[in-house]
Image 1: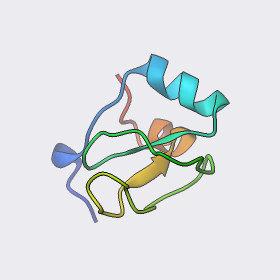
Image 2: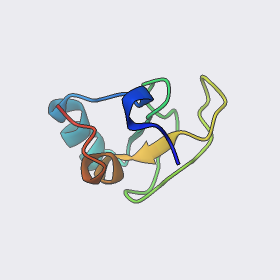
Image 3: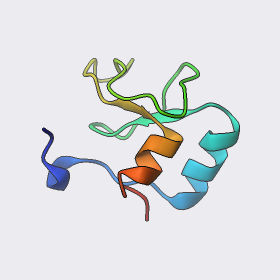
Length: 67
């Protein structure tokens, strides 16, 4: 399980945009996904940091990582 204190947070406007564009973000480094991701994606490999931290926009919203 990941430590909630170390996870990135995202502006609601970025999440809303990503929801319409099949986007996601790495919750470990904060970078947007280079590829389209499913709304419920969890743990896809990040093209920037290489870790399995890419989650779909709706998943990030449900994880309460949105400001």
